[in-house]
Image 1: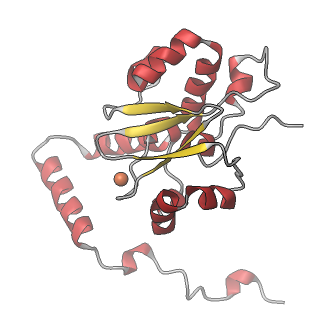
Image 2: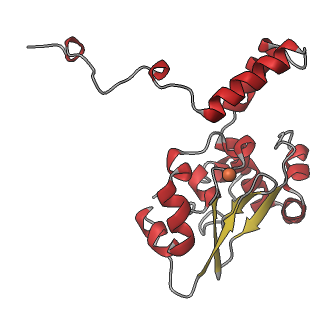
Length: 208
Ligand code: FE
């Protein structure tokens, strides 16, 4: 019996095998220039990238959960997500983020039709499907069909609103608080709020 690792892996190219594209070359050149000019060091760059990579949807979920139990916080969150996040010690970054609240009548979904703009500091790295051409083009044209593929079937009377994120403005969906969570504390509520709930491709589900 052969061990799977005895086989060669012809379909797993090393990442160095592909030549650098135009934008990668430009990025490398700009990085080298900024380092040489002393604008930042390689260590500072590494620490910044580590900080970005360490972010997860837990931060966004805390904001949503707090908005469910604190109406005044919800108002401030709807007015200015970045400032409201700072209240909880969360750095949402310098790019404005707008909270869009679901209601019984309206369901919000976010996309970046141009590329992959995303509230990364609140949700962590974007999933691959968010960056895919299929999602970016289809969710605008046929949001209900796309949501159905995510397992989210919305009643006909619910209006679906798609928000197109940009480099200047990003979005965070505030889903409706699910029934049956009366009296729950903030951590228990936050545990219901998944990444996809805050993109709008899922809704919080109470287990059991
Ligand atoms: Fe983008």
